[in-house]
Image 1 (spheres, rainbow, N blue to C red):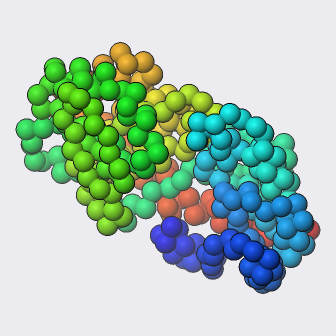
Image 2 (image 1 turned 135 degrees about the horizontal axis):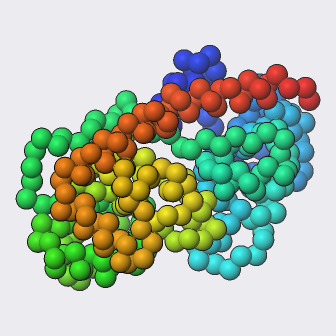
Image 3 (image 1 turned 60 degrees about the vertical axis):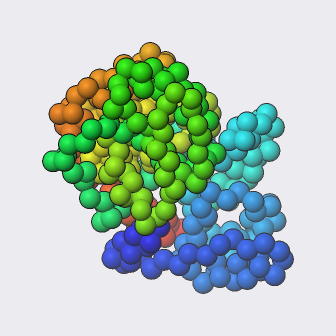
Amino acid sequence: MTACFDEFRKNGVDVIGMPIPSGLIGRIKLLREASRHDIVVIQKKTSFNIIELKLLRRANPRLVFDMDDAVMFHELEHHEPLTGKNVKKFLRTINHCAGVVAGNRFLAAFAEANCPTVKVLPTPVDMSNCRPKDYGTIFDTVIVGWLGVSGNLHYLRRLAPVFRALAEEFPQFRLKIVSNDFIDIPGVPIIKERWSLEGESESLRSFDIGIMPLDDTLWGRGKCGYKILQYFSVGVPAVASPVGINTEFIKNGETGFLAMSDEEWAEALRCLIQDAAGRKAMGLAGLARVVERYSVERYVMQYVALLRKIHEADF
């Protein structure tokens, strides 16, 4: 994230980003590059074999592993049986690291027994590109919005009965999907908008309510709730499944609602659809929470403190 890089530089830390190369020649160049820097941060990738990790650590013992997904349970993302192969790759990687940055406490728990320094830092929001929703304009519709990649559309499908019931009860209800692909739900009016980085903030501001349904699985618990923070960043309240870090972000009845069953989802959305003043109050409370705790500036400040600690350690 460019905003993070700029903020790191403001805090006296020069940052260079590069993809992990494949092939022998590429890996050799990576080792040479690693030796030229004070610290090397590996983002989410566990593809290095044991020999490569030993050589990488020899080139630079100050390795940091950064993750905001349950990389040790990647099979579950693709609805495949657990084999343990990704757990082994994860442990192999962090066993060679001096520190780990985890997006939530659930992820951190898997690293703490194998790495001397583990820091929980939820993915931040770049508030410089965020402008709060205009609550002064009243529209005839109430938009329940979801922003995400097509691979997660199955979470929306599971709420189809809820959406159908709301569509029957509230003529003003619309479901808006901002993604790289879309679904249809019979009986539910859906607004489909192709995601773009340039238009993301405007898309978020068009929501009246943001949603984040999630399954209570090992993969789901590893999610870092960034979608919720995005909703909050433009002053929109959120309804989400009470899974993982979602329960930390959403204060029930203050910044939105937590909902597990279809009945709870329907009741939470019904409450917000009917209460424009409540939506505004909760959305602005969420915005204040993001500014106070989850901004890029605060994130980088804590990250830099960790990097300086690792840099000053003896190896």
